[in-house]
Image 1 (cartoon, rainbow, N blue to C red):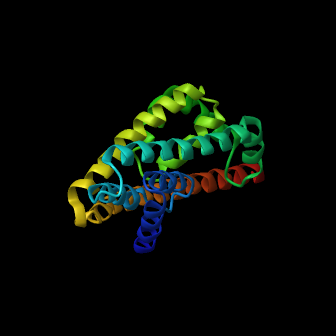
Image 2 (cartoon, rainbow, N blue to C red):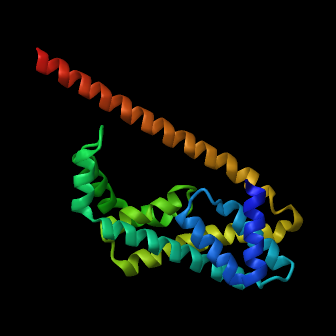
Length: 209
């Protein structure tokens, strides 16, 4: 899959130059299965070969990250708190109180979540939706997203730039971390479902008694 993504991203960069790298990263934010650990080092490698300047690669990929994040922020804002609570009320194993606890957490730690979330695979895309749901002030969201994205993008673009033909090594190392995160998320979901099923079972026994 990574080879086909690399070919697709290469085509964008060859056709559009640095804006093509920005477009690829914007789409990566909207569709997390597109891996930034492929696109960003490839942009750095392309800059090293003279396909764009290093500054252009950094600026356009960061701009692409911001555009993608703003689109997801908009989705969260359009969905809104009340609609989300109604949806949660209809979902099995989910309670409106879960949403309320998530809101309380985001209200306490939202700034750190948006900034550091931009540097965590998977969460770097999804963190924009609760920011929109909670209507984080847009200037603050833009500032934190741009800062976090700039750090993440710079690290990977520079890695591709310095590694040259070996830019694909980055994907292997980051892929391990991504798989660990996916495993932890799956484990957390399984624990959550197990707790909720246990609570439901105890509630049913209490009603029968």
